Length: 426
Image (cartoon, rainbow, N blue to C red; front, side):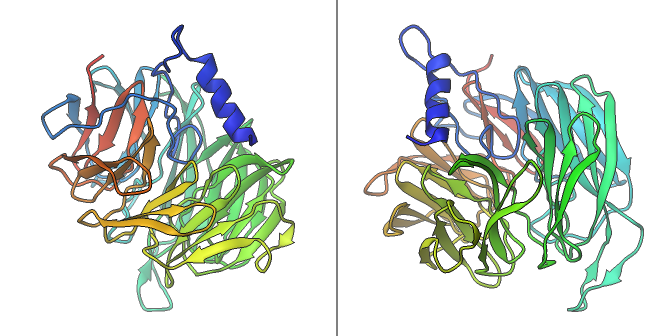
């Protein structure tokens, strides 16, 4: 059994009740949850709802943003951007959605971005003591990109607040410019905060001291190409590996010092979806201009392009939505709404189903089920297996770009105008 599987099993045992049932106590502290891969250990979360049914509460959210909510015990945190240029961090009471406080991280002009992006797309992160946010602060200029589109340059802003909304620190650790805008969710690892700075310039990865914001290390990325993939961190092959796709490659780094373990060149230019790991293989899906998937053995050193790619497929790959790995299944949905399930070890497609509508939100899995949320707010719930097994199809009635969050038996879904808490009331 691999390290992550053992850790998940141990956690399940520790929080199991006297009859062995899993208690719904897991927080959702950052992008794609506690493991950064869309997985929840909870066994009972909602499978049926509408815009009015099985809704514990619904609150209007000011401004716009595609960042997911995060949940820590009795609080929900999310970021947004107002039309007057305020970038906000909001704290809500998870019991009823009441706004407890809001803080303006900074106020600046509104940067250009892709139509599927927003100015508040970076999901915050928390360790239960501080809440960390990440935005782009434009420098007041506009530059013409090589294809005659305008780019809004600026600097990455990362800030930390305590749970009462007091600013702990705020830093600007690097330049950032992209014709598609900004999205770099921070990732917590031990005593540091890891942030991806792939952009249309001198790209980099960096680690900040989570208590002070000081830069611990900053590693340059040679291909200088925008991408929006968030790394995952796993103990693999006796090494701590920070793995991400983007910048014309898939690569693994040591989060302690930023040194690189291994790299797979390409297979395309731009990436958005985060990678996932099933205990044996790393799975990635991309991108632009080429869309394809790869399964990679993560035990290499140096350039492993010709030796460690186990399988590759161009069948219905996704660009924006991140996939999930469930047992020996690998599931994803293409941006056009075509969902697929593959045999993880071989890449053989088991089923293919058109769900309808475009898809931007990443997949989540809990209780043996996988949740696909479309841009129109329709969530399709599927049970992985040897055939397509539809469990439920739920219409929220509001457009959605943010990925869902799961905590304490409830599902949190951010629409364009409201945040929904789905499930039984506390």
